[in-house]
Image 1 (cartoon, one colour):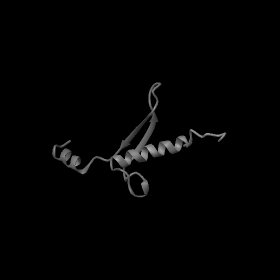
Image 2 (image 1 turned 45 degrees about the horizontal axis):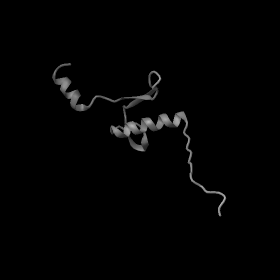
Image 3 (image 1 turned 90 degrees about the horizontal axis):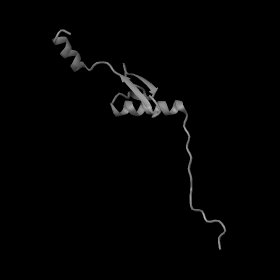
Image 4 (image 1 turned 90 degrees about the vertical axis):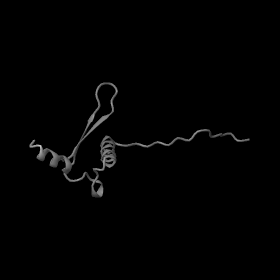
Amino acid sequence: MKLIKPHEIRFTASITEEELRARLVAETLENIGALGPEGKPAVGVTTRITRGESRRGGYTITVTTPMPASLLALTAREGK
């Protein structure tokens, strides 16, 4: 008869705030196709990550990119 009967196994992982922010930004850039070589933002792309509002928490990731060439051409034709 066994004295110890295991019924649960737990795994624990930890991540720093800085690592979490970096991963959130990298995943966002990858999802919109703005991740350049070596896992860095593409040329001209900037990011900012802030804490969410109120008690709900979370994060807000803002990505700023240059205007696409097709829109630049359209605005040039319209004289804007």
